[in-house]
Amino acid sequence: APAAAQGRPAQVTARRWRKAWAPALLSALLLVGGGWYWWDHHPSYTLDVATGPGEMRAVALPDGTRVTLNFDSRLTVRYYPRRRDAELARGEAFFQVAPAAQQPFTVDSGTSQVRVVGTAFNLRSGPPQFVVKVLEGRVEVRPDRRRADAPVLQLGPGAGVSVDAASGRHTAVPVAADSVGDWRHGQLVFAQTPLAEVAAELARYLGRPVRVEGAKLAALPVSGLAITEAPAGFLRSLPMLLPVRVQDLGAEGWRISAR
Image (cartoon, rainbow, N blue to C red):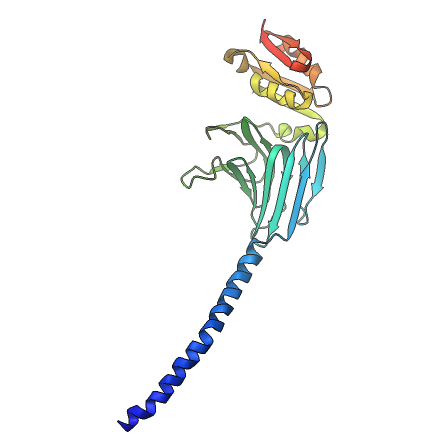
């Protein structure tokens, strides 16, 4: 009995100590956890940049990555300690990503995502399509980043993919080396490109819609070189390449119909 009596004060003291210090320890743990979360989710670098019609712009990021924006494009960049995030809200951009194995570079556009470590690639954000073309290195493309079971596509140099923004369906796109980011040099190279895609591309530079009448015409392959500063000239030359008629409708745009 005396020994038990002697042990009680020590137990009481330990309980009091735990009761007194528990809130402080909990606060310290919360502070450390909150500080780490803040560190991991607080950007160390931010950039919001946009171009208007007829305007191109090149930007250099702090890690050596370079991005060139095409006409009427909008890009947001956020750098975090463990990742580099970008979003192409609209338009087109050519990325030359500096290698950083511990900081992957991702570009979101709509529901799709491109993920790289170091590479050079071109990204066009629809609608209606999200198109990736790779010049150097390798990229991962997630047609629908919201779905855990969605496919992850691996693309290397000379490969491309087109993703339908509405359905998420993707198709391979043949890529010629001289066509990846060709717009940066004031030209557009078409190599057996469907007329519908050519029309959509030219419309971006014309600032007016270009409508192709009929699925049969839309699928016709087109090969040629267009100058970005004179897209109407290439459009007017289409009847020399294809059995089509091209009409300038003024403010309503252009119409391509069967001849």
